[in-house]
Amino acid sequence: DIVMTQSPDSLAVSLGERATINCKSSQSVLYNSNNKNYLAWYQQKPGQPPKLLIYWASIRESGVPDRFSGSGSGTDFTLTITSLQAEDVAVYYCQQYYRTPLTFGGGTKVEIK
Amino acid sequence: QVQLQESGPGLMKPSETLSLICSVSDDSISGYYWSWIRQPAGKGLEWIGHIYSSGSTNYNPSLKSRVTMSVDTSKKEFSLKLSSVTAADSAVYYCARSTTVISWFDPWGQGTLVTVSS
Image 1 (tube, rainbow over the protein chains, first blue to last red):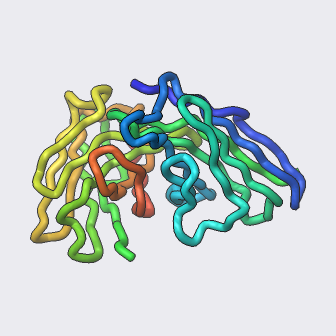
Image 2 (image 1 turned 180 degrees about the vertical axis):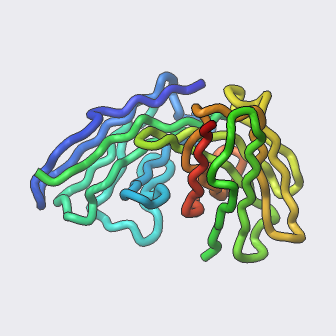
């Protein structure tokens, strides 16, 4: 299985400041034939299902605010929230879809400082 | 936008077989992959497996011996059976859609809580 490791487990950021979440895969999720990284990011608020934010490591889902951005390639990825808003308080998960079994990172909890 | 709705027993006893159904709101069940994902309280997400609208399946090896998925396109629903449950199977169970065999999940159902307790 591809193991996804997120860091930090939690972080507290002031409103309007930047939040950076890291995700590392145990093997590359870059498919060389199409040069795409098989990596998605989700946001989960309390009592709600996860919501897709980003796929192909950097493509924002329709309707997702542009303060959310994804970057990285191979085994190391980052989700950045520029100018954190109160409604961004949530747990964020990365997920690889390079191969089955599909696996998720352990999650990063983002709170307001 | 398609909507998914899980339904299930809520409370179960150890050794029983869990049965869940996911209802799909529109006629889009054909041509997609339909997954089950679970989340124990306060913990992360685990993919259980998926079924294609044709009925082909792919299960997580960690659960494969206990999992059976099926689909009924005429009823616009798919189902999960998990046998010999224990307390470790207590979780919120989500259904979700994917466009290809290896893909992200979107949308998700609201989830249904299953508690296994004697």
